[in-house]
Image (tube, rainbow, N blue to C red; front, side, top):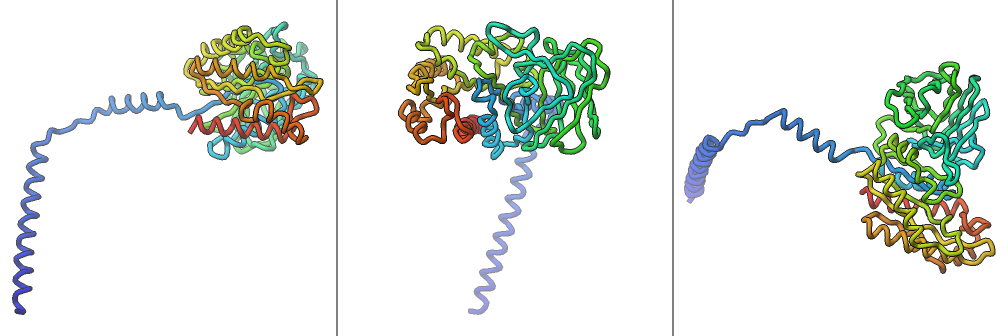
Length: 388
């Protein structure tokens, strides 16, 4: 009985070896009969390039709006919400509001050693020139000047300056940076790029040469090098859709290469006693068509205005009319929509939040920092859903 297990083992081992040999011979024969595959390296490289172009890694969000954006609280909340899940670092477009004698966000500051004149986008008085920020700074005399730019909340190592070709380039007056002078021209502006060796929170700039024809600047952008997601907000007090319906401005937005365009208007249009639905729709579509012409592949998102009140503290029912028109346009034109009016509870939600006392500003049209932060978080989450 002791020899039986040994015998069984020898027979099992023999059969296993035979099976392995047969499998190996079959595999060799199959490989020999299979057709060979030749790799065309040129075609492979071309295909890789096509895939890269069809799936751009960079995301640039351009957000246009009114005083709700200019105050800065809402855009900052959007930026913070996006940055939690996306590689969004630098502050993006910064606008010299204070130098243009109007209110400015707290997240950045632009100062200068001299006084500047300014032109802003308006309906009845279009500016002589239009910068990418919706306004320009200009001075006619040839005196030297300096700028100080601070961004404590969001460090950066890249500055882009939009200027007219006759305007001197800006260079650091303290520290060092590599200046890449702009050669490409869009409209009346070129773009210089300053690359800093380390992260910056405050920079001091001076004009590289003495100006001979005055100076005109159209805006500034602060970024981190190799940043793949950008958010740029442009808000103008009192703005409506037609404020930004300007060929020169739409052309200047090419500098920002927007892949997504968010339009947040309607509060000021709703101040009319009775909104013309057809007239409002025409204004909305004029701006959309103008921006689509410059950015045919961009994804558009409309936001409805939040509930608001009139000066006599009565509820403004025209906000609902404006919101309804925007919903219809978004559905017809296949646009994304974030319904802020609905998200805040419409008329009932407006009354409830105003009674709470910490959401609205005193006028019932604007909001407290808390109110703007809440709304910015809502839009930021909607954008995250869209991007992810």
